[in-house]
Length: 262
Ligand SMILES: NC(=O)C1=CN([C@@H]2O[C@H](COP(=O)(O)OP(=O)(O)OC[C@H]3O[C@@H](n4cnc5c(N)ncnc54)[C@H](OP(=O)(O)O)[C@@H]3O)[C@@H](O)[C@H]2O)C=CC1
Ligand SMILES: O=C(O)C1=N[C@H](C(=O)O)C[C@H](O)C1
Image 1: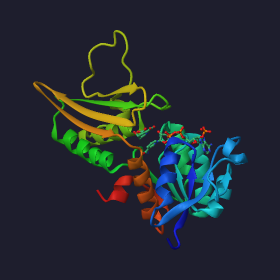
Image 2: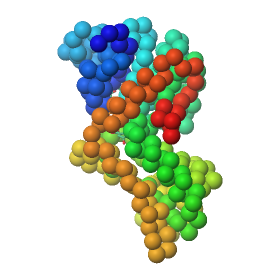
Image 3: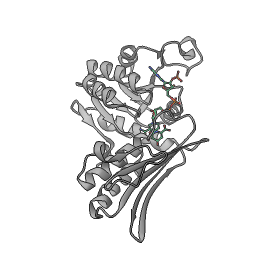
């Protein structure tokens, strides 16, 4: 395959890193160019993929492969954003779990990069986001909105990035701010549901890849929009589509709705 663009996979030894490396093996336009791991990672002293550099230095990885696909952790993504901005490189960010401060740091560090960020890179979830916005806009306040997500036992952040994307879409549809509408914890004598709340519930267990329900519960009827991921390849495929799409674009912050044109 001639002249494929080299890609840095950040967190290459992780669950998403493995899915990305598999797809890059015979991708038509992109190839694995470098692996970025944290300092002290065993792959830095051998054992990683053969024939590509493995480094803990984002700038060194980007010097070899100036498109980085990043499914790591919030602080790591901020450091990668800084290196990507310094080179005007493409930074595809799948990492979730940003709080307000780390998200602000990410956006500030990434000025000058071509950044595509989404809490979920799959086609199905991004369609679900659009549907959620439309259904929330169509239904009145007598429909209570609840978002239920389920993931594997190793997931670190909650609610999931996807659940928060769906919450944002529901809030936009309703014309409210998610920050004020979200109900993220209920325990004990917490009283009845607040009018207009957008509730979140979280399940963790086993090897669940990722499941999301958006429930619109009204008097006498209930609408449930559901996405079920059974294979991480859907996220990796979306991330590589984003990388291909971003090449040659002007610097800026994009999301998967831009990439998919939906
Ligand atoms: N947007 C989307 O579509 C999706 C997003 N995600 C998100 O992607 C992230 C990763 O998920 P997953 O692959 O399951 O997690 P894993 O824990 O399996 O993988 C994360 C990888 O990142 C590495 N890492 C951590 N810190 C650094 C650092 N400073 N520099 C370089 N590498 C680092 C980890 O190394 P080590 O093991 O040494 O800590 C590990 O290899 C999560 O935030 C998850 O929510 C996941 C799936 C889809
Ligand atoms: O950590 C995961 O596994 C996933 N994380 C993303 C999220 O937080 O929504 C996307 C997907 O659901 C898998």
